[in-house]
Length: 220
Ligand code: DX5
Ligand code: ZN
Image 1 (cartoon, rainbow, N blue to C red):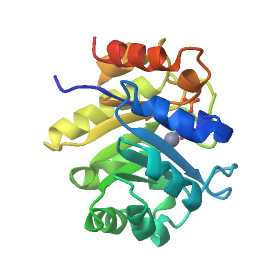
Image 2: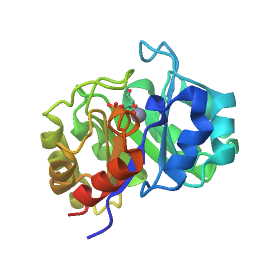
Image 3: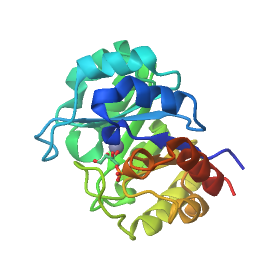
Image 4: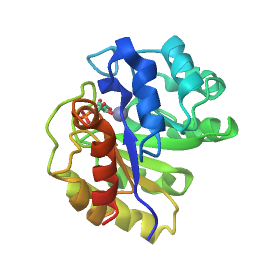
């Protein structure tokens, strides 16, 4: 079995002490930094943009997993590559020419991800599954941290796993939203490869211990 990965979401970090929180993740069992970029159009919230990502990139010692919750993501693909993103995930619902967007991300040397909202059926990815390195299943409605996990996600993970196996694809399944010690084991068992956790990690008293615990649960 391949190792399950943990990606703390910096959206829940203390922005007044961002370097401290990045160093914490550097020294933890986490695998990736999850970076949420929101434009206030695709989602009803604005997070942070290029200058902040540049600062994160300087201190982060692990891959940057960038989740774009923005319209017209194609306009910024080159820029995100320059800023050091290793994974670049666009939303299915924001891309008219998804196949083209995926190729453009790969041309820039990044892993190409596609995120799907809770209402989007995994079968819609059928014709591009072999072109996708990571499918990010939103297990809350995108835009905010700290929301409750949507239980229908388990069904979607199983359907997606099936689709990946049928197509002999190497796509990773990433789950984003409401992840905690209550669902990490079940998500991993259902077929999730990467778990994103924001508030559960950063609101914890012992953040290092919380990441370690998630990692152990996902790999048990
Ligand atoms: C939500 C973001 C998530 C968010 C997860 O739109 O995509 O990455 O940071 O936060 P939690 O883990 O608090 O649900
Ligand atoms: Zn995210």
